[in-house]
Structures are given as structure tokens and as C-alpha cells.
Length: 209
Image (tube, rainbow, N blue to C red; front, side):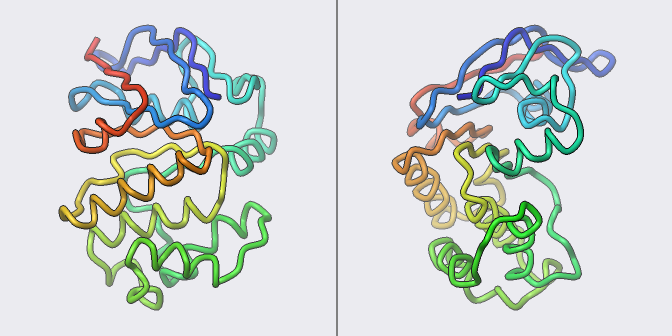
């Protein structure tokens, strides 16, 4: 369960006014709104990567603002998988090494066979030996999702997971995400993808303040 209570954040004239909501356990909640309304900022707050100006975020009843340093990192590695936007793969590691690295860093026992299984599901098996600079934008997004799945956290947060994907790859990602819901994972997905939003149990719509 994720609960946001009267969260606010402003950067000069940009940002959002108080927003409150809960993301129920085992449900897929969509987060949508116009570009620049603060969706990515909100996700960064919900994962403890950014502090709000006011309000609280509870993850399984724990207030993120009460945690510091290693405590916050431990909670994230145990509870939350976050698929961000942008180029976050390590350029000097192969795709397979990038898949394994976050789980290994979190102290989780993962095997190449597990990574290969996620890669097969997302149809990126053919690039496991490649480096990030050698793969397409759509492949990059699927690699990022696969490595989050490998963390096997009870909460999965994703920022525009179907962006830069062709129709077939986007549908594949939608299917994988809905499968995670069926497995009991709690999902919060920021997206403009209407085909993904219609599969959500609930939708939060943000507006520019």
C-alpha cells in the first residue's frame, strides 16, 4: 500500500498543489495528466528520491520522511521497483550485466537463468550481450523493465513504460504489467497510453497548478 497525503512540490512557477490518494495492494493504478503537470516529480517523491514541500508518503505504513540514508535505501530495495525515464543503464556493462546489477546491489540472490527468463518474455534475448549504446530506444525501455522485474519487489512504479515502443512491443509491456498485477504486485504507472489506462483498476488525473 502506498498512501500520499496532501503532497505538494513547486519549482518556481511549476509544480502541483496538495494531492492525496492511495494505491491499494495488488491493484494497477494509472497516473495521467498533461505534460509538465508533475507526474515524474510525484513518482520521485513516492520512491523517496525527492522530498515534498509538504505532506507525507507512507509505504506499508512507514513514513518515508522519517527514514535517512541506508534506511531509505533498504526500504526501496526491498519494497519498490522503479522504472524511470531517461538513460540509466550503465554504459560499460552488457545488457545481461545491467539486468543483474540492481538486484545484486540490493543483496538479492539472482541467477542469469532468471534474467534470461524475463528477457525472453520481453523479447530482448538477442541483445543480452550488447551494450546500451548498441540497442534501440524501444529495446532500452524493455531492458529497464526487465531489470525492475528481476528485483521482485511487492511494489512496481513505472514512468511511461510504453514510450518509444512500436505497437507490438507496447502490447507486450502491457501484458507483462497486467501479469504482475495478477501475481499480487501493487503497480503505479504514469502513462499517456490509453490502452494501458483502460486496464487499470483506478486512474489518477493530475492537472497543472
